[in-house]
Image 1 (tube, one colour):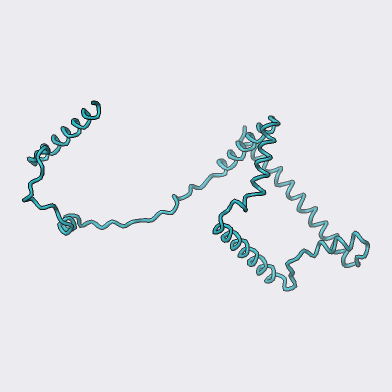
Image 2 (tube, rainbow, N blue to C red):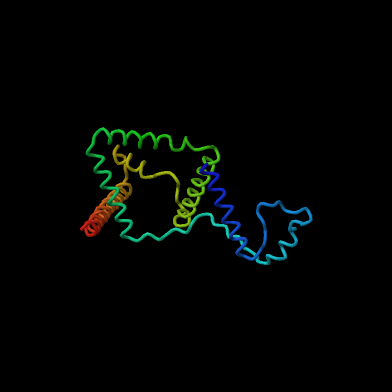
Length: 194
């Protein structure tokens, strides 16, 4: 009942619109067979506009400001700290995280696995190329492991010991720089929290 009333209202409004444009067309009468439908050529001639189709793969990304990134980081930390307070939920979270890390590659389909391996290979080759340009004696395996082994066993030469001390100093400097960066980040976060 309600549907038929709505349909009749729509027909009535259409009839009023057609009448208001000055066309005397009775919507209840079928079209006469003498009238020919508009052909494609006629339609082309009336519509001369050319539309260019612009393909958009993804909408343009908005540049996030530093404040937005920091506020997101703070929200994530607050969520994580709140989660840590409930041991059952935190245990479930850790289990899900571990399962995801174990299975993330195996969940890919074959085409995605091939893409991933190709990207990784490309990155490794570029890394080796950069290293070889800087140092022609570069070898892709880690020589520090052998060096540490010789130092541990006591078979290291003076040059090995000197190189080992340099590596230790580099490592300590990196640790200090990392601690300084985290301290500065915490300072900036505290500024935005207040």
